Image: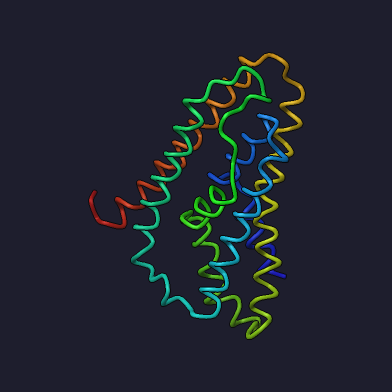
Length: 198
């Protein structure tokens, strides 16, 4: 039970994946973003299974700052796409999210890896989760991970339904992009600290 509480509390907190989900809801792209949500869940399942079966040796702690750098670059890329989009209406939104977008941003999201490492290296062994149970528990947690940006997208859709003027969609789109940039800067800071560049 502690495993699920821990993972859900971290996965449903604000972060790059959830900001992108919120933005997709604001732009009325909830249905078009289903592949993105599935990609997020698949990336989490891949990481859980890899670390759950092979252990911490697959991603040593000293590699986390490099993952932070890749995550920051990809987050900046998504933010630039959002900043440069001009929306005349929600139906004409140009940047639709794909399975690959969701998979890559979650795969290189240090927050996701930092959730998985203690679960697979400490909590699974303590709860005697081994063998096929690693797959079952990891699958359940990964479905929760896919649900996080979906819940944010639902919240965005509810808010987006209340707005009729396209200029407000553009303002909100820019705000989401700026939030992504701030998140990316946090990842970049983790890289700089990890490399002892300060």
